[in-house]
Structures are given as C-alpha cells and as structure tokens.
Length: 492
Figure (spheres, rainbow, N blue to C red):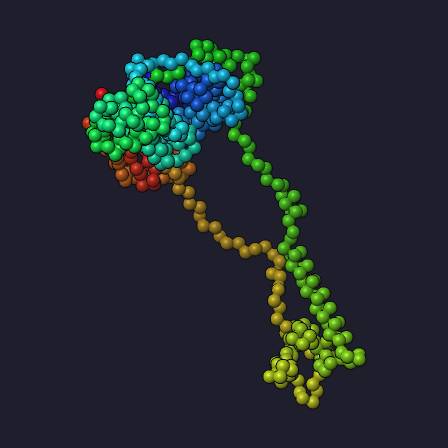
C-alpha cells in the first residue's frame, strides 16, 4: 500500500495521549506515522507540491496546539484527517494555489507495471470526485466508516453506501479498460467503443465501454473475477513529501520565535464562537408586555362604546329621543342592536316577527321605559358576568419534582482492522449516560453478547472471521442502531 506501514488504532490513542500530555517527542512520532500519508492526501486535493506541504505543516501544528479539543483519543485518526481536509478546502476556496502548479514526484510504484497503472488511472477518472476521495481514504488510508464520516461530514451509513457504490463503479470502469486492451479480437463492438489501439481511454469512452461490458455476455465472461481494484489501489504510488518538511514542522513546533505562528495557526483552525444572545435588559425593553396590549384594546372598546352611546342619544329627529332610549342610556353595560339603539344586559329585549324589540317580562306594559334606581343599577353591575378577570397576586403553586433519573447515553462503537489475521477487538463506549447494548446482527464476521455500560466507561468485544476473504469488510450491528465496521486483508 504505497509503502505505508499499517497503523494500529492503539498507536493512534497513544499518540493522542502523548500530545495531550505535552510529550516533546510526540510531534516527531506523529510526523513519522502520518506525514507521508497526509502529504499524499493533500497532494490529491491540491495538485501542487508546495501548497500540499504547507497544508501538512499547518495541520500538524494545529493538531498539536489544539489536542485538548479532542473529546476522545479513539477519535484521533478521523480528527487528524478532518483537520487536514479542512485546511486544504480553505486553501482551495481562498485561491491560495499558485498560477502554475508543480506536481510532486511519486514513490512506491514498483508494485504495478506502467500499463496497468495507466489503465487504473483511466478507470478512476470515470468516478465522481467524491467517490475517488472516499475510496482513497477508505482503502489507501484505512479509515473506517466512522472516521470517514467525520472527515466528509456525513453519517457512517452514508459513507458506507458511498464507498460501496464507488467500488462497484470502479470495478466496472476497470473491466472496461481490461476489455479495451485484451478483448478487441473477441467482440466486434469493442474497437469502435475503445478507439485506436494503444490510445488511453478518456472518461467518456470508458463509461460507454463499461456499459457495454455490463450487457455483453462475451465481454462480461472475459472479465468475470479478473478485477481486484482494492489490491490495485493499495499498490498505487504515492506523492513524495519534500525532504525539508520534517525540519520545518519541528522548528515551528519548538522554536520560541515561532510562538506567534503557532498561535495564528491554532486560531485559524478554531471553530467560530456561537452568536451572543441579547442581554435580558434589552429583551425586556424591546418586548411589549401582554397586559399593556390587553389594556390598550380594552380602552379602545370603551371609547367605541362611549361614542356609540353619544351617537344614539342625539340621533332622534327634531331633537326627540326614540322610545326606550332613557332606559337604554341609564343601563350600564349596554350593547348595540341592529337598529342602532342600545339594550341592557340586565333587561334584554327579544325581537318580534316584525323586527321591533319587545321588552322582557321584567318591564311592565304600563311603564315601557322604566328608569332603574341606583340600587338596581348597582345590582345590575354586580350581576353582569365578568369575562376578563386578573388572577389573584401571589407566587404560583409549587409542585414537587419527581426524583431525577439518569439520562440514557449514546452507544459509540469503534471498528477494527484484522490485517492479515482472523480476529480483532472492537470498542464500545457509553457517551453522555449509561447504555444497554446487545449485538443484533453480523455481516461476514462472528461475535455476540449483551451488557450494560456506565456513563463514560468502555468495553471491548472480540470479532472473528472465517477463511474466505470476500471484499475484506464486515460489520456488527447493535440494538441501538450503531454499527461497527471491520476490515481485513487477503493473503494473495
């Protein structure tokens, strides 16, 4: 795999703890473990030797300065690559690339013959950029789906789907390349799709030929079982980091004159602060009290009623008031009727068939417009229903709070890599509270069990596989929905 030795997850955790403890040897060990990988990854994104070297330099310094922000050492690898990717994307978006890019020399190309390497690159050119990056990180850089999701900003399930689709597309594209070079004499359609012999397939031709291979029994039989793109990707050469990059990183990390440089880099990688909330005093000034709105509405209603009272009292012809107006004017709390007169809530009138209001039995025929006494008027006021009442002042009633229960936590699982072996250990961690876990499904691996974890504790679970290699990947699904992904290598 490009000459890179495999890095165990336990080594990641040791590096993270050493950096956090201020170990002076930790940055050099981090460089030895990851600098070549990170430079190749940056070079894939930036396509310029000097810009990729500066991105690696700044990312390693930022990781050293901001290691306290890492919540768990087990997340170190994904956090390291996510930090590096963020710096590369920032340089791309800010236009920090030179006008003429200078590609870095390659190293570790001894495992592939030049023709196969060219065919593989032609097949990779067919894929979408997101597919190429996901395959590069998953296969060549050995990131599991959880780490890959942290780098790409997606969920582990989404990254797994993306990688699997990219694998299938790359297999199909590489099969098209194989048919273009070896199947011209067996299928008459291939020469027209592949173009002249010896000419490299572009993305369009490769895509068309891949569609043909998928539907042609002759070509499909020819490439069946002959594609091993995982092995080819691992054998691809890597971009060689500049020889002076290590000295630049260590000088910035330890030299007192570079203290401001370290602070600037760390500040650039720090997340932006959350927006500040307005002060409580400002919120009280700007907010309109509910009682003020209700009081204003009540005043408006009273003014309208007074205006209608005055209007009804002066509305008769030749200065005469209509019959019944004295009683309506003297009764408080009146409401307007259809003809514009006022009727009292205490002595309401019911309309007849002719539409003229008739008094209720409380008014005798001999006195159609009785004038209520003050005592009756007072009684009418107290008897009138009150629709809007203010609750009595005082503290609100208190209710005893039930005893607080510990909030359940979230199960965080970390996959493992068997390498060329047949077993490894996955890690289970209770984040934010206690969790109950159980294995509910496995894919291409064997394990089982259930248990409880207190908040902030972890445990390990052994996973094994059979003799068949398959695609070199399996998974363990837990009752919470968390999935641990397992990978291994084949011995051929």
